Length: 354
Image (tube, rainbow, N blue to C red; front, side):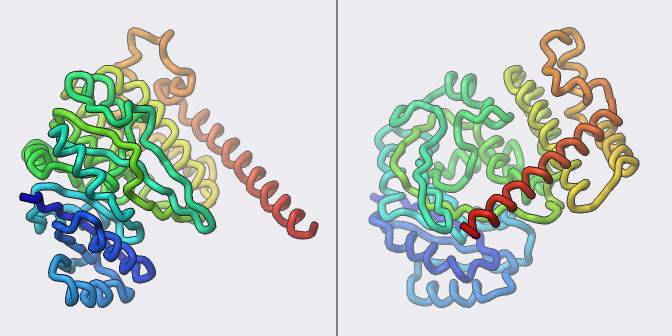
C-alpha cells in the first residue's frame, strides 16, 4: 500500500506563483498525495486561485486564517494533514517532477526518519543547483553520530542544511517532538522559523538520509532595502537555543552560537544607523538594555569565565559590557558598508555608459 504524503503549502500574497507551485505537486510522478494549502490572510488573488484548483482536484484542501506568519501557517496546516509522511513547500517555490519519489524511495529502503534533498536556486535570469552542505551523500547517518556530530549545524556552524522545505519527514517523529517542545514557537515566527522546526525535531531523529537528487526549486528573493523589524527575533532565538544546549549538555554548540549572536547584534545596530538614522546615544541605550536582559550574554560570560585565553576576540566587547566600543564599531561598519554601496552603484552606472 502506498503511503500518503501530506504536502503543506503556506501562502501569503503569492498569486503570481501559487498555481505553478500547486501544479508541481499535483503532477508528481508519485500521486498519492494530499495538498493542504494554508492561506495566511492574503489580500491579493491567491485564495481565489487556490479555490479554483481545489475545485478540479480533490487532493487539494484550503485552510483560510488571519495573517500570523509562515511558521504558524505551517503549524495549522500540519494539524489538518492526515498523511504518514509530511513535506513543506512554500507558495512561491515548486517541486521538480520526481521530487517525492526521490525522497520517498530512500526513506522506505533505509527506514530513516527524515530525507534531505538538494535544490535548485532560481534567480531572475539563471538557475543554480545547490547540494546539501558537507555531509555524506546517499548514506544513512544514525545516532549517536547524527546527534554528536551534526546537531551543531543549528548553532551557527553550517554542516547540515537547516531549511524545512525540500525534505520528507515521518509524521510520527514530528508528533513525538511536539509533545516535548513547540516546533512553531511564536517568538520565532518570521526569522529562523525553518531552523527552529528542525532544531527542535533533531534530538528525536534516530537516522536521516541525504540525497544529492535535486527535488526543490527555491525562488531566491531580493534582500530588503528597508528596516527589518523581525531581525530582533533572532535574539530570542539565541536565548532559546542556549536553553537547549544546557538541556542536552551539548558543549560544541556554545562558541558558534555566541559568535552568531554577536553578528546579529552588529546587523541590528547597522540597520538602526542606516534606516532609522539613530545616533550613538540612542544606540548605547538600546545595547545596554539588550545586553542586560539577554540570557545568551550571561551564559557567554559563564562559558568563558575560566578560559579567557580561548575566548574569541570578537566576543570580548560583549563579555566586558563595553557598550561604547560596540556602538563605535557598528558606526564604522555602517560607514564602510555605505561606501561599498556607493562604489558598486558608481561602477554599475559607469558600465552602462560604455
